[in-house]
Length: 286
Image (cartoon, rainbow, N blue to C red):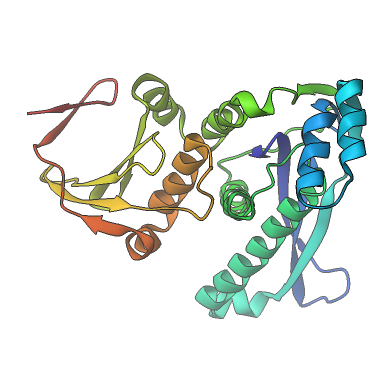
């Protein structure tokens, strides 16, 4: 399961023989909502005010919604897909790298389609292009977790789920983002996040320590000597992104694309001291 805003998705991936070509196989991507029906209690006044600011509504609409107060809408979330990627068995057997590159592109395209579908429900997905691009990366990572057998999709529940979005401006996005951290990281990493507001990722011969702070610097440590290497500043386009969403995006980069992390990050001098890890995943400076 993976989240895009308030929406939860169950990702399915199958590799089957193509019914149209005896020499080909197909990878079938499907995204199902964890809950088919979502009931959202929203503040129509805030929505009308945003539309008025963008020139999409009159001020009279703002005044009418102010009198009406909060309201509830029931949304039915459709499946996304199935999307089919046909390939030759010979490609997978003889040109594995070429086949994996094609699979990566198809998975990325499907991930963006899932986020595009989710974005058609503005009550459930924050209106931020940068954040939606981050959601697509997370969906893509979930696709490969399913392929590797690390994540199992659950049945779609037909029971409605209730969401109160009337307090959107009072910090709900950060709470949703914090729950997203739980869905993406390992249990021991989530424990560290809850206890110390930081996540430590080991990739290769380096530790990446990611704090839950807006535009917090990522500390990089040598995993063998435990000596500091550098601090990386990674700033996303959306300046108002919840800090926990920043943690998730940086975590995925450190976990799966560390080279890109070094490319987009601004390098600063390393932190002082030497880190030692003690249970449970606590760091101390000497």
